[in-house]
Amino acid sequence: MKGILIGLMLLYCMHAQAEVTVVEPWVRATAPGQKVAAAYLRMVSDKDAKLVAANSPFADKVELHDMHVEDGIMKMRPIQALPLTANQPVELKPGGLHLMLHGIKAAVQAGDTIPITLVFEDKQGKRESVALVFNGRALTGMVPRNH
Image (cartoon, rainbow, N blue to C red; front, side, top):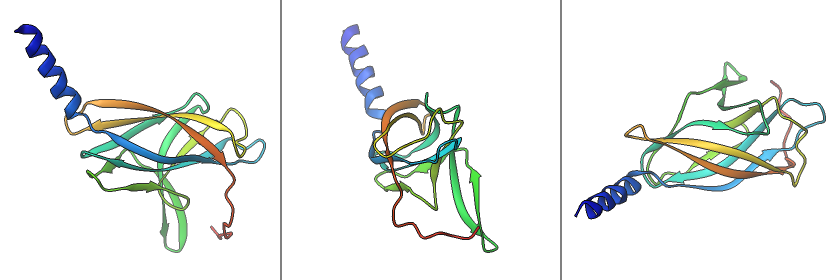
């Protein structure tokens, strides 16, 4: 009886965690000597949750950033968490939300693989880490912008 109760409790705990699906994770190629890189992806969670942190052995620090235009000037700012509404896709893309890798260990080139772990938190405060591999990619077709 005790084993059945523990099994049901474990099943409930596993069911309560949000499952996040990540598609097309990539890091923008960088110039030699550049110490920061931007990472992008698309994701959707099956339950309400939030992205609260990220880390990588490839960088000293990884932050979640948002870019927006303020008084005609593009500005970037770190944000503490990114809410994920159940079944609503969220895209981290150039010119908007993105992961900023500070203190990268080497230049990123097209075809490189960069390990990044994302940390999600559900409504109960339970955190889950998801280890991903991001692919280095050259950004093509980008129109230069004045900042």
